[in-house]
Image (cartoon, rainbow, N blue to C red):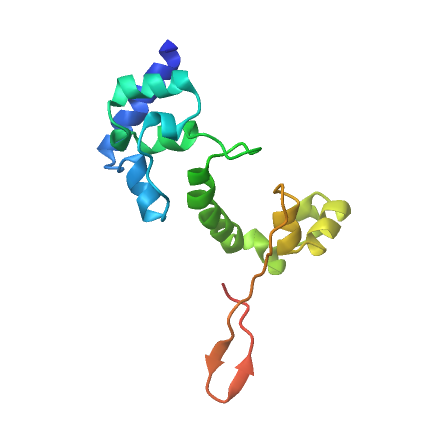
Length: 158
């Protein structure tokens, strides 16, 4: 294994343990994903599987960060199942919770001028998802109505 890669791996392992981050398979279980049963099940790359087996001994001791980065990718994709299933919901929440996503902050200079501003003003959640994925799944987002006695109004808060 490359000396730099090994050094980074050791540093990541130490930091993960210091922060008490659980092993990769434990997070897969928490996100209702089937845990891997072997390093060969985890990755299609025999060299990576052998190296990980040598370093960890057991798939259930694989650190979280190396697991996310080394997991076999989905067909035709750049990320593995865990990265997508664990990361996507938090990415979307971060995006929707960012003040720049609020029209109150928008002006042409915020988006690099009129062209960028026009793109943002015509954007939809469906366009965001469909322009950044290989397939265009059903996409919907609705903010539940705020219930106030005697009033029917739609909430704009997230």
